[in-house]
Image 1: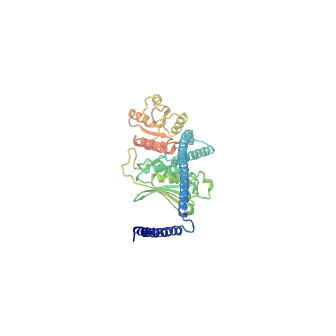
Image 2: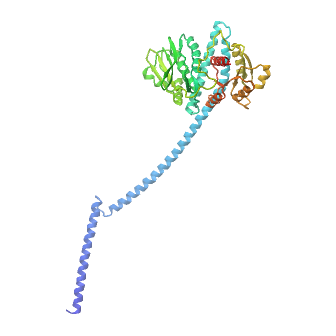
Image 3: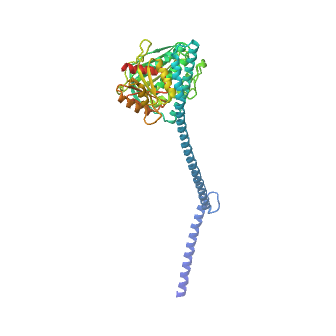
Length: 458
């Protein structure tokens, strides 16, 4: 075989090999195309999967952009909501401060009016006039209750009213309430039964008094005939202070609703149901603040039993308080007769009202707007008790500071600070100074019992 023939044979073999390789590649390519078309579903085009991927990517981008826009809008809405919430809280706090300021201005003339009315009741008047004076006193008391209720519910909702817990003999509270409501119940022809207690408890005296006073007011208001009971039960976890009555009771379906705002039990004696329906709502909030539970037991037609459980005191009774019952005043023994009482207040109507009321009790009253004016008019006479307003006109010192200054000058002088401000800090400062605190409008019977107690100790 010559060289030419050998070359031809070699070229033919290479061509055949190339053709075989090309056939195999075509076969592989065909198989791949068939698989792509098979996996792409019903779409006959071989690039349907790619096109769908591009479409899905575009949809994802659009939806992502829409989500970002939605998040931006939500962020703006949330910012506006936070601003609105802060504005509402500021408005609520401003409303609370406004109510407190207005109530203070309203309580000043109301306090003077109650002092004058109480002093007038001690005068010898015709029966018709005496009845009119009683109506005036009750109307003023209703106004006091409405103002106090509105201010208290506002302070509780705003969270600016705080508890000032301290140990005290429960008799210092219940004795005065029993004497006060014995007279209130007597006007309605009801008997008040009181069971004293010598227990020492720990609570906020003013707030606890508000709770029990509400229980007693409701008991007297809704009881047409029979009696009201005020007493205590010693429980393992605390002292249960109870107020019961022989009234119509509270239906079971209303026992939760009566603790809501503007809700009262439906009672047939609607004539005695004056008020806003906020009393028990305030009681419920005070109970939660003090962490001292209230309870209600009732049977329709057989009366109701409201109670609050107060923990026993773990510390000793503070100075100035006694675990013995406060002696009640009577007409045969009057420790106030002839005693010298100083009154410092920058409101002329309050001064005149105090002079009229204390003078009707037999006290020798010296009253002025400043301590220097009071001392100048006293002719060297030593006072037994000082009644001083907390907020004085010159604002140079508080009533507590002024009373402390006078106590250093007159050792043994008992001091009572009077204020329309219910802040816990004032009550705490008064207690730490070993003084007593009374809130405006003054309750004459409460003042008289406190003065009797202070003079008996002296």
